[in-house]
Length: 233
Image (cartoon, rainbow, N blue to C red; front, side, top):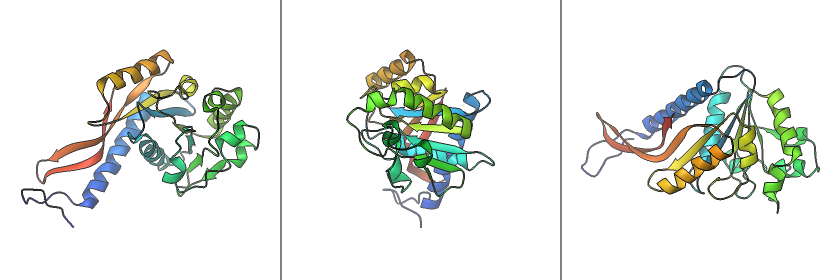
């Protein structure tokens, strides 16, 4: 079924839009892969300037795209302990999860959950703690990251917005690169500059920017809108 724009012209159909979004994620996957030149596990952190910019959806879809590669083990870690959404995107039970393990309530093996993709696992948040910054900066978190690095080809961190809280800073220091997610016509330049400055001061490397809610144009079919556009540095 094709949609019509205000002038009555036919736009691309939903299948075509979904195809383009999938291809955009595959392009981002390739760019991330080539932006981190190292052997062994690659650790990538996703963050944003503020809430509601599509950070979690982007991180989950990139993790899924990475897991579709042959013999590639990927795990996504729900590190936004204040406003967790990874478990919802993957339809997983959140507990037991990261906060439980960091508090010593269970072992790492108890919180790793399989997903609908054979090569993709996830660690959900578990519980919303009163001290997320302290938990994420703890020695226990470093131990978890090191252990995951030994078992997986990619570790994807869905981190809190660095423009709002400092929770993500300790993980930025341990990651190989940061992908910044912004929303078109929502994120301001001062917010973006502040976020990039925070990443730089934390010793992080910005791999690129994912811009959500961008209107694009197809010369054959007229204008249409889709959710994801990518710009890599």
